[in-house]
Image 1 (cartoon, rainbow, N blue to C red):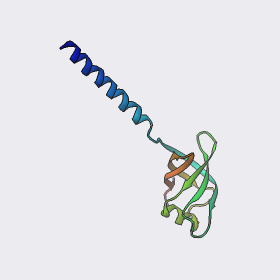
Image 2: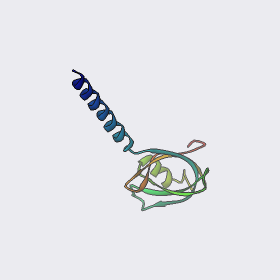
Image 3: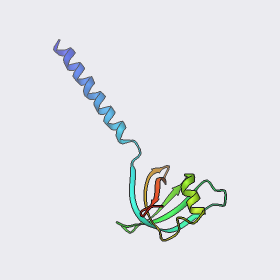
Image 4: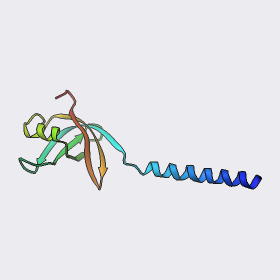
Length: 108
């Protein structure tokens, strides 16, 4: 009986350990506020753009890939331009910073 209880506890600990390692492998969402220094749109009908932001906290330049149509329209209509302060959330996917949220801090 003691061996059975010990074996069940061992399997429970093993299962919890496995679950804890798999949850840390998920992508982390990063938040930042920064000023746009450069916007690169591939063309008039482009489905992606790259915006370079200067992080307000660290001063580092960070390139963010933007895929959503609403933000791309704002780039094309010049509602978001160089010098605007942006609040964004992004995650690293295949070595690229991909935008999940990209908005002006003052609203748009």
